[in-house]
Image 1 (cartoon, helix red, strand yellow):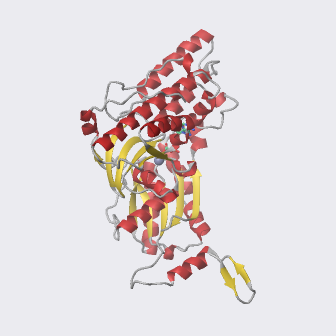
Image 2 (image 1 turned 45 degrees about the vertical axis):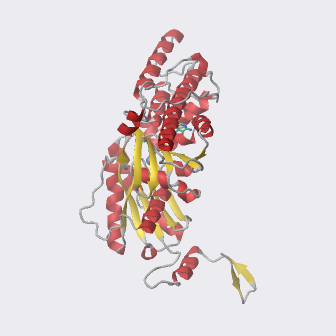
Length: 413
Ligand code: KG4
Ligand code: ZN
C-alpha cells in the first residue's frame, strides 16, 4: 500500500503496523473487524521451534524458526528430552516473529498452536507457552492438528478449492487423504511402519553418507537424492513393497532391511568396514530412491482412481497436493507427475520452506478455522496435547476392499 504524503508530495510505504491500524479502523459490520484477522501460529511438534503471524489474505507478516536438525544429525536421530530442551531454549523466538510482524499481541485475533500429533515432550513446550500468552492477552485459542496444517498450506500459496487429494511424506509422516473441508478429511492410507524420510535417513546413515564430502551437511533424504544423480539404479534391483496389497497403505521398513543386507554384502565384497563409504553407494542410493518413488507413485495412483470412481473428486481440474520434507525430492515429484498426467490431474507442491515444518502453516490453519468458525476456544481448561491422533475418518479398509487394479505406468524418470 502506498500513501501520498501531501506535505512532502511523495509516496511512502507505511509500516505494516500503520496499515493494520488503518484497516482496523474500519468496522463495516458492528462487532466485526473487516479484513483484519491476524493469527499467531506456534509449532513445536517435532524438532523445529517455529512461529509466524499471518493475516487473512495469507500474508506472512513475521516469522521465526529454529531447526534442531544439526544436533539430531550428530546423534543419529531425535532424542526426545534433547528436543524438549532445545524447544525450551528457543520458544522465546515466538517474540521474534511477533516483533518482525509489528503486530502487538493485543491486535491478534487468535493464537493457534500444534497440539497433536507429535513428540509429547516437544508438544508440551509449545502448548504451555501458548497457554500463558492466551491467558495474558485474553485471546481465543485454536488447537491445531499438525497434519491438517500441512494439508491446508497449499491454500495459502495457490487458489485451491475443496475437495483435493493430499499426499504427506516426510521423516515422521506418510499418508494419503481426501481433503473435503477445513477439518473434513478422509484418510485413504498411511504407512504401516516408518515414513519414507525416516527410511531414507536410515539408509543414508547406514551408507555413512555423512562422511561423503558432498553430503556431510545434508539430511539423509537430500544426501540420497544428491548421490543418486551420480549412480546407476539398474545395478541393484529392489522390489517395491506391498505389491499384492491393493490398498493405499505404505511400508518402508522391509525395503530398508533389504537395502541394509545389500550394503552388508557389498561391504564384504569390497573388503571395507561398516562406517566407510562404499564405491557402489551412489548406485544403491539411486536404486533405493527409485523404489521408494515407485511405491509412493503406485499408492497415490490408486488413491486418485478410488476417489474418482466414488465421485469424491471432480472428474476435471483434479488436484493432487504433495507436501512434507520428502516432497522436495525432485525424482519422487517426477514419478508423481507421471501419475498425474496419466490421470488428468494437476500436481501442486508448496514451496520447500512451507513443505517442511514451519509456523506459517499453523497460523494459516488458524485463519482457515477462524473463517470457518471451527474449533475456536475461549476457555482452555482441560486442553491437553495428544502425541497420537489420526487425521479424519479412516476409510483405508474400504479402499482396500475396492481392490482397484492400477494400470502399469512406465517410470522413465
Ligand atoms: O517435513 P520435515 O522437515 O520433518 C518431518 O519429518 O516432519 O521432513 C524431514 C525429512 C527427513 O527425513 C529428510 O531426510 C527428508 O525429509 N528430506 C528428503 C529431502 N529433503 C529432506 N527426502 C528426500 N529427498 C529430499 N530432497
Ligand atoms: Zn510435519
